[in-house]
Length: 342
Ligand code: ATP
Image 1 (cartoon, rainbow, N blue to C red):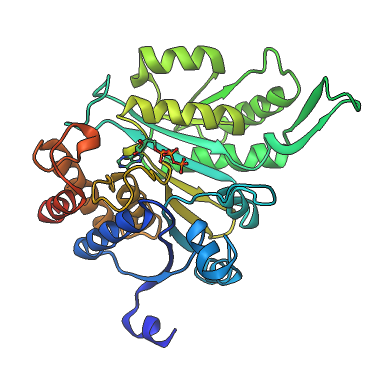
Image 2 (image 1 turned 45 degrees about the vertical axis):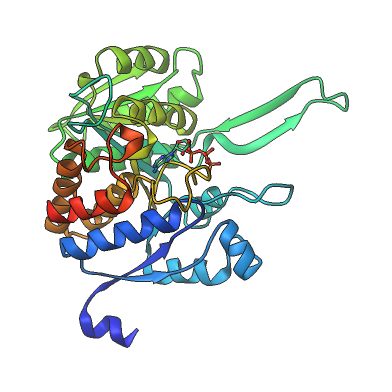
């Protein structure tokens, strides 16, 4: 701790994770350093690699580190196969009550995609709804099963408020609340009621609501109509991958999971990509952009801006764009180009 106090760097827990995690983490650390990010990484294990080293996919020292720092950057994690292991990503969200999942999706020149004008921030409620975890078979024959969606006024209020505050703090103009209240009159109806009421407190932000099926169509037909989207757990899960698809896929999509206190965990949303792990081919864009979100979150906005600029420029050029996006570069060439373009 004394080193940290002396050099004034903000301590951040760093989970390299599994598969391509260590490669993209190292690339990201280089870029953060070069961009002037004032952070002190504390590397801690989680995932399959932690099962090997610590016999626990989520060791107590990792939880302790995040508890102390209240900030983490996380590479992709593999959940060990077989019974008894729940998703570590879900475990972290639950442990730290990270109720807000923030997924920006912005078109980048050079990245192959259907649109060049997407700029959406999707904010998903992360803790309740259809993913409340209350599910069972009906009767011993297991011929029927039921799942219970829990929507609370508290859960709805905090995520909708988060969305409006996010919009205000990031110079966004509009919040669209996505629901299915025409059918799910009580659960989604409550969420919509909370949204409509809270919109009155934010007269500077335009507000509308949209039914989820219409949203799915509108997002792929005219995505430029969306600015900030706020929605419940299940719809958010699906639509956030859809929004990543609009900008070139999961390889470029960053995310943040933010809690009520100060705790926040930033992550790449793609998986561990075991097929290319260790080959130096991985695209570190998603984790780099997540790290830039982290810097933005701790008010190191200039360093964050430099990172985004460097990434944009490296992605714009065939010679420095990674192969998964139709370019010619490996991880190191891309990372060098980001640093040269900061
Ligand atoms: P997991 O089991 O951890 O979800 P997965 O391979 O099933 O892993 P992803 O990791 O999301 O799922 O990968 C899907 C495909 O996309 C793979 O072919 C992978 O190589 C590719 N991919 C994913 N992320 C990247 C990346 N950052 N850079 C390059 N290719 C990637």
